[in-house]
Image (cartoon, rainbow, N blue to C red; front, side, top):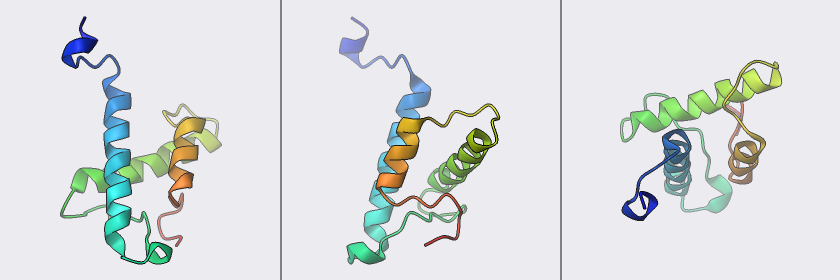
Amino acid sequence: KLEAIGFLWDVHNATWEEQYLNLVAFKKQTSPDPDQQHCNVPRDYPANQALGNWANTQRTQYRFLQEGKKSSMTIERIQKLEAIGFAWRRYNM
């Protein structure tokens, strides 16, 4: 019944998905040429500072996962980010 009125059981995942969609939109705005588009959101991106912080957090969580530390990064998230060309190192193009 709660789902019918839009109740979210997993707010963390819903927030991740929302920011992922914001990242996809950001990428499309970087260039009209798909070959020139990128996901390198500036940390202090004035149009959406939360997106810049989120992108940085994804890189940190990925690094934690690689180091065997506690991380919220999942294989599914890695695959989604890599599918849109997300760079795990901030200045890779």
